[in-house]
Image (tube, rainbow, N blue to C red):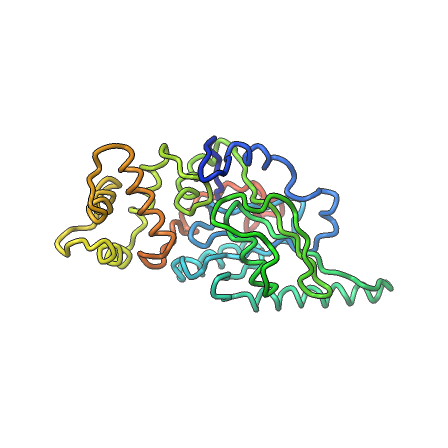
Length: 312
């Protein structure tokens, strides 16, 4: 089994310059010199495509906490399999949903346990005012700021549905003895992970790119379970006699028919594709996972593999 992230495309959409963000992403996500003082690297990973949204920083090896976000939008069974996969790799993993708050108490309990351990060590060394320091990491628009706002119980971090909302670093005190650092989204562009871009476009982790339209729509179509297809059919008022679409064009034809237009040119094809992707993200077709750990391609070079002492 291998692993994956994604690459960027030089495009601009909704006021977000992807090329500039991609270039900026090559800089350190946080000052490297503070890495020894960080106790927890909290990596937010989208449950719907955990392989495609995985990011790990070698400076925080051994301090990883993987948070499978947006749990209510993903297939629960698949999320549990991803949790088992990451735990088999040696990572503490928690499934969360920042909207409903599911899993957040488990995160708080984990941080509280680490804090108590740190305070005991500090007490033996005669150190007072010890602080647990947490850094939140992940790809753009994966929900870091939303998660942190929910965790601290009030809005302290900027949020939005456009990748790149968090422009700089923000330290916020979670409790008296816990500080959290929010970071801008991380993007990397190695050639071997270009295949992951359709996942990113479906999840709104990058701007819409018409060149990825067919791959992204086909990825979603091929992922639809029978139950998801039935929900899609009801939502778009598709006749019961219509069989599940066999390719990306057929499913866009159904979206276009529902909207009262035909796929006569690229503009309306894009219109249908955008509508389908938006409805997917809004959960119109139920809880859908785009990849499973048994077949996902994971390219992260810093992923611990079972049976190896060093990252593959």
